[in-house]
Length: 76
Image (cartoon, rainbow, N blue to C red; front, side, top):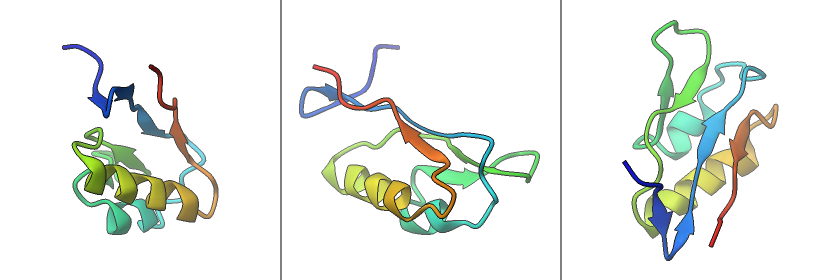
């Protein structure tokens, strides 16, 4: 599967192990973040598909209290 692009840019969100399972991300972007199967942290299970989901993922990233959401950033 090729890299995901929105408006020509690759997007790659992830949640690192700093996650405290506060659910801020899954509340902001439920189509992209959820609790892990181990139920000890949240995960990004799907990269954003469209501008609305992208905005929700950035909202989740901005509001994460421990800055556990990363984004490898847009890449042309």
